[in-house]
Length: 253
Ligand code: C5P
Figure (cartoon, rainbow, N blue to C red):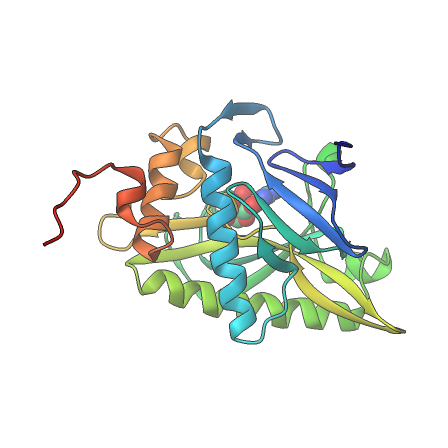
């Protein structure tokens, strides 16, 4: 059988040519990286969890009318997605101070922000994905003013949806990152959510205990990353608990 063509390999995912024009197959790897890939490891099962979780969030977003690249899950590690032109910006939404915002502004982690704050970083590993302003984005032509307005509106809708999903299972959505792509319909372009939405790209804290259930567990050596992601999946009902822990057979009368 002819090997399918690899289109792109990133730190946590691989894109292959899809079965039809305008589609890709997105493969989720077990690789975990942090600090611009200075820290690396393989976390068994991470790719499987992120494939399922990203499917869950993207499907839910589509149901409330937020367009995404997700078409369908193909197997444990792969999903079929729409091909998009990725806008070279990481869109970060923050509800509570943490991470680089806490460092930059001297805010204690966990401080509630006056309102959700949207930030943009230029996607450039060589530069360490620097924070950029809307002025930079327009002046350098990374996106147009209309795109920016649409990106902010999309990001805030994703924030409301994700905050609600997480609130329902006792988890605080501290912040997250999304990527947005363009699709063309004739001469018209539309922006849709691309890449992935998973605990790799969110900060998720247990509301009662403050326990971290996201990639900070790996970044800060706080424990077992796969256990943290499994807990998120279990609470959301994405992985039934008997998949991870074998149970005794029961007699059916
Ligand atoms: O590191 P920082 O505090 O700026 O991260 C904000 C949010 O964006 C976190 O949820 C982090 O996981 C996510 N992020 C990401 N990929 C990056 C940078 C940040 O998913 N390259």
